[in-house]
Image (cartoon, rainbow, N blue to C red; front, top):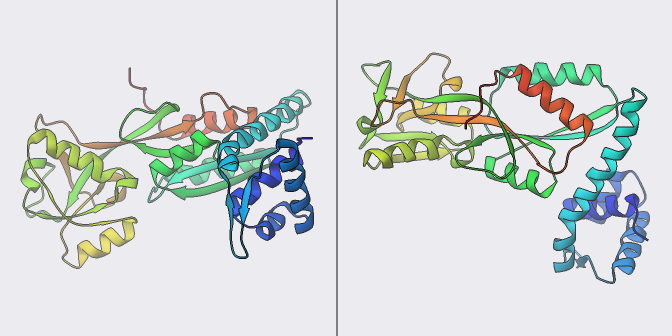
Length: 291
């Protein structure tokens, strides 16, 4: 028989890659987790994991089953939350992903207010690159993510803001700088996971120039440190430049910017996830979506 407890054990072992860690996460004995996995494997007629003395890895059957198991748990949680909504009780868990390097002032305020209003809801917040977050939302490992979008996505998208790229270190400083003026200048940029490099190099390709990236880093703090040590001009979103900078413009004079927004699965929705989505979209300076 397949039930919620067995699916939860399967997902926990898959994500933790350890029966012991999965047991600690679920707050049950390791033998209980092992028993649930064996029962699930017996029901499915397939081994879900390959086990060695040091590692636990998903089998091909387990790889195929994991996204469906996550989706099933989300759907079951949605049923519980729908019933809870009728009685005015909200509980459950929302898993929120945040793009690495993001510094969104309103986020902490929104999450704190949400937690105070719905103390029965657990918030789980993780950080990764936009590409990784999008994959986790698609797989059902995350409910919502705040990402930098550089192209189209099959997921639900709500744009929150456009953050122009700025250059710090130019002398003399100007309100804006054409991307063509940055060629042959060493640049310090955030990595592709934060979206800045993709946006900058796309503008450069459209203008027919090649940029010299001296170093790319994953955190704004490291970018600022390397810039201060003379490694190159600093290129970061304007939200990360408290003292201002020169906005990068493309060959047509338009601002080069990264697009920050919310993604969620188009088919897997729960009341509490939808509620947090509404709160985030309402409070975090939303803009009109693209056509």
